[in-house]
Length: 288
Image (cartoon, rainbow, N blue to C red; front, side, top):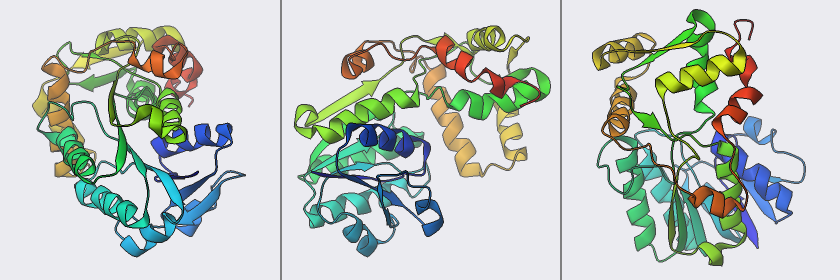
């Protein structure tokens, strides 16, 4: 059985690719350019295609039975992922594993609403499917929090005491790989993935402080101040609007769920937040 992993140069795609490679399953990884394709790990067949190029997609999907579909959170997400679904159907793909997002089931705004539109198209396509809706990635903490921690010993957002249930992207990659390798075991399933614990941003600051041995504070700021800072940092307005809409999902009482779904799918305990922060503590150092 041939597996195709799209978005192989992205964080989610790389995590899935790592796990599929370990399994020994026949697979290929899709990249958007020759330069990116050079990063394909040993034992992985690289193909070059773009979600906007249906002809290229058909070639990438040749002989593929199961495909992992993930796209960057951009306004064209629905159109681009729909292209993959249609090309998969034409190429004879039997099963798609879709990377969706927490909130796609009940939040008609921001990124979750885009993902829900794709989910609906996938369900209507006649293809076999498995859908994963992950909560926030632990990897986002060093990526987005660490820069201001290094510079100021603090990070800022309009979170109003909301809790977030973080999970390690490597654990997500592991459960998605299982669905790709054994699609019949996960057919027509929609998995809401939460982390093993939920923390406020103030509690996250305390955890980071313990992990890296320096004082780190969280500062809750008005949403308008956060909007202004994001725009001044050069973020496009559509992205600022979408991120703040998503943030309201959390401050509205969602996104802090804790359950055993991830652990059951993994067949082992998931990575805990303290474990993750200890592993990446150097990201928060002023010398990083």
